[in-house]
Image (cartoon, rainbow, N blue to C red; front, top):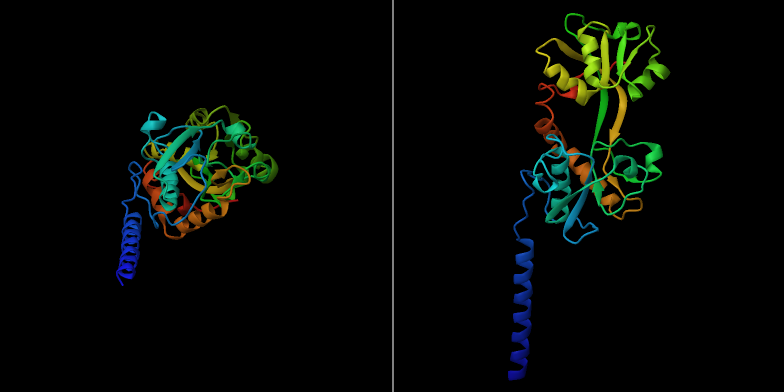
Amino acid sequence: MRRKSLGFGFVVAVLALAGAMLGTATGATPPKYGKCKPTGKYASVKLKTTKSNTLTVGYVQLSPRTYKGNTESSVNDGYNYCLAANIAYRAGIPKIALKKVDFAQLVVGRLKGFDVAMDDIYIKPEREAKIDFSIPYGHSWSGLAALTENPITKERLKDLKYAVTLGSVQQRWLDEVLKPTQQYSTYDDPATAFTALRAKQVDVVLLDLPVVLPAAAESSGAIKVYAQVKVGGQVGIVQPQGTPNRTKINAMVREMLKNGTLKAMEKKYYFSAFGGVDPDSLPYWG
């Protein structure tokens, strides 16, 4: 009887210890990721990472709106950083490590040593042959910016004189799709294109929305973005080809799109620079 009682007591003690350990694990306080406030359920997904307890995130450049900080170690905010934080949070990964990557090498699949890379990288078929993309988490189209004293209309689209940057996707669209009646002008950078617009050498500047919207916002009402055209592309999270995490990352992106996490982040990090304009509110022309 005594031996049986001791055996029973031992089992009870083991179960109690296991329960206590389980309670500690499930009740653990989630880590903090700078100023980000992740959504979703903590540690609900398991990811395979290059370093234990670390999500290694590739980036092209630091920027106040994407990776806010002067150095990799000081980054604690920004759209892309907080997108990474949402992934790490859902995967129960306590640490994010940033790793600068060469864009040209990244998109042809020549880089390793990272788990995800994010810097508004367009999803393109030729890139998908070399790297794995997530489903799109956003898009970047092109905006039509003109002087408010010389408003443009959809009906005039083909007859306008355009300013684009040399070798851009916008220049290719003019050549292959719109084929305007006037010869467009090309510039080496956006600043000179807007200088030409203010000088009335061109009717409209056609560039990426993240470029034209801030320029309009800083123009004191002289310039307005009238519409957008679907020139540009959808952006995705880059992962090394053959990653076992792709399906799980896709599920995370779907959840963040559905529950409004990404839209809230877009408003927080981009809309102020856009003068409060929601890009999705702009009409599509062409």
